[in-house]
Image (tube, rainbow, N blue to C red):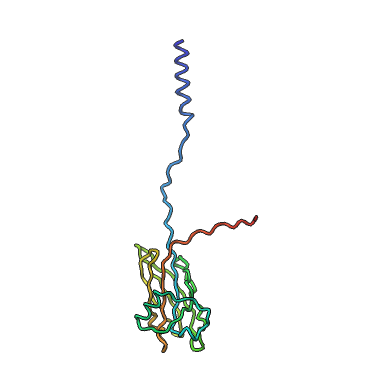
Length: 180
């Protein structure tokens, strides 16, 4: 009987390790945080009455800022254009399309050359015939916004401006179910 009891204890002890499942180790590499989306809008010193009626809207915060700077007439040349988040890729923000019969510019491009320590720099270049540009630096958090004048592209109507807005990281688009 002692042998049977001993055999039962030994068999029970040898079965216990087989019933435990091994767990995978916790991954050491944490998921990279998503980058906030950056948007740029071009504002030109043109009377909106002389332009197409289908022009993008100039938001009130932009209009108020421009009026404080002494720019009475202005029109949005573009809507909000999302920038490519890669520091090596420039995004075409505006093709230079005429808004009235007096104005024609070269295309405008923007990129994000620097993004670190909670700050972001956006470089916007183009216009013409003499190339002009401006660098905008702001906090890299949703809701941050800034307006900058493009001094070298001044015309007799006034200065063109760029507005930069930081939005939340872009969401992944859901996969399309082609079976439906």
